[in-house]
Image 1 (cartoon, rainbow, N blue to C red):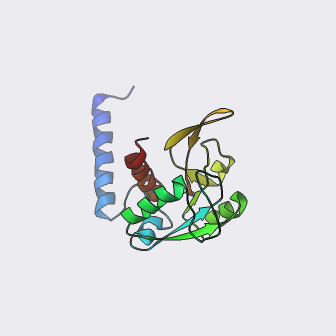
Image 2: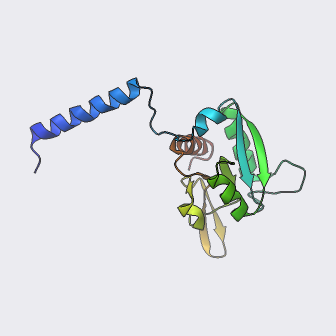
Image 3: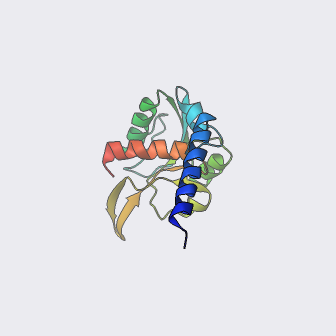
Length: 161
């Protein structure tokens, strides 16, 4: 069992480490690839795969549906433009892994098989399917935790979930 004095010393050391990291300009959570810094005032590269009503792709260049509307609000909050790319789930996940996309949408559920290759947001809404209740998520590049947290905060503020 750890003594009270030892716990106090460990807590102080942890606090000192946090202060040192902040003083060095290190932000937590971090984006190893700098996604948040690049997209703020820049461009969010979004991969979309058709899955109405979540994402409608009609060939006009701008997708429609629930998720593109949310992503447009997110980009506005970041003072960013949007660059849409349409493709299959597999194509978009490969582009995300290569760092060619920042975000992928397409009515994905929280049980998506892509969780080994990418990071998913917390569920931001639910829908009823033939199999039961589906919890919807968006997908970002693995490891870009600050970007993921920023997106999750936005989704929570917009949807309350």
